[in-house]
Image (cartoon, rainbow, N blue to C red; front, top):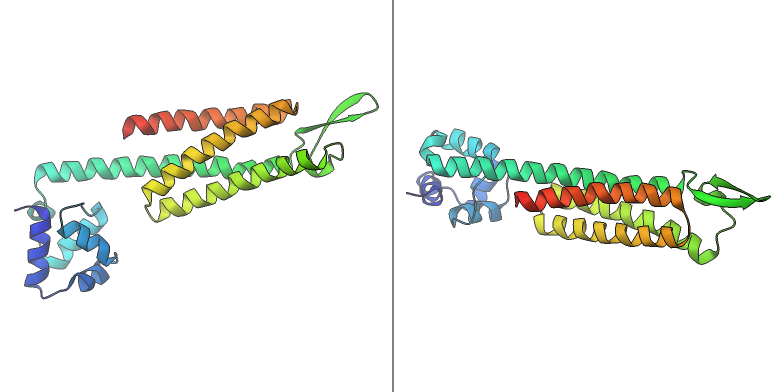
Length: 204
């Protein structure tokens, strides 16, 4: 008997609905429905809760192969969450571009580095672009954290890819407007993201 059949049998033997079981396990009814239909497994913590609730061992619930597969899936999910956290931090760190002295300002034949808000030499369009990029990146970082918290893997992947493409585009813009310090920092962030993206794709 497979795990989904065992769970369904245990639930019915204890006269529980899917909603009632979900409440006791602190998960959604959709999660319970997915487990019982064989479309997924609970995580380790939920599995322990099921074991305690029905007074059965984890070995009674899962075969050795299923347990190994579950552990591998959970490990992969944890690694992906860690990568997402790094992505989000890098995107949120883009806000420093608003305040660090990364922009060249010509004065008396000399170039000095100033923050964005102290750079009157930039025209309105350029200044707006410099301002919008960090804000957009920070928003992406926040969305990635939210998607990761709710285990919305598809949304997390989409935001990661968007983050990489926007970062690449911002490198082109900052290079074209001759901002070497900002460009080098952007390129460093970009390379970290690309490395994480490659590692993540190999894992999946």
